Amino acid sequence: MEELIVRIKALLSPNRNILLDTVLNQNITQIGKYSFNYDHRSLQINDKQIKLTSREAELLKMLLINRNQVLDRKLILKHIWGNDNFFSGRSMDVFITKLRNYFKQDPSVQIANFRGIGYKLVY
Image (cartoon, rainbow, N blue to C red; front, side, top):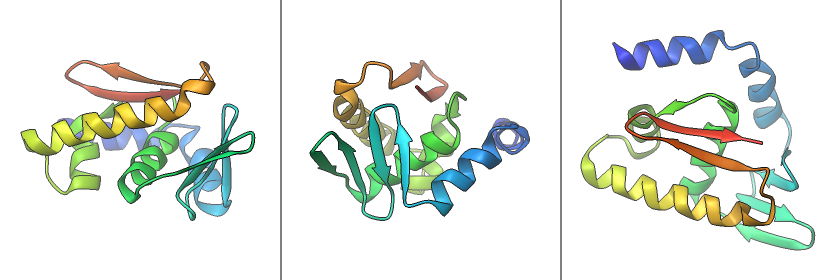
């Protein structure tokens, strides 16, 4: 039931459609000072390009689509990892840490943790 509520809220968000269009219909999306290219799985800041793994790109895309909204852990895990067991959860935490490290050069970009609930991309 909780997952259903999270999905409904995401669908009803006024910014969701704009962000979804931005992510899916354009090759490059700005995230603070970074350029995110989902098709090429890369982040770029200045002349530095960071190659992302498939899961890093999927996770970032999911956070971007739901920007400024808390995204439920279980929803992320089921969507990207296919299950929400303990080991997948720990794996996701590692991927979140990697994404945070990639965004170190722009302090305005944050991936906030809401303990026991999920994550939120803010910029």
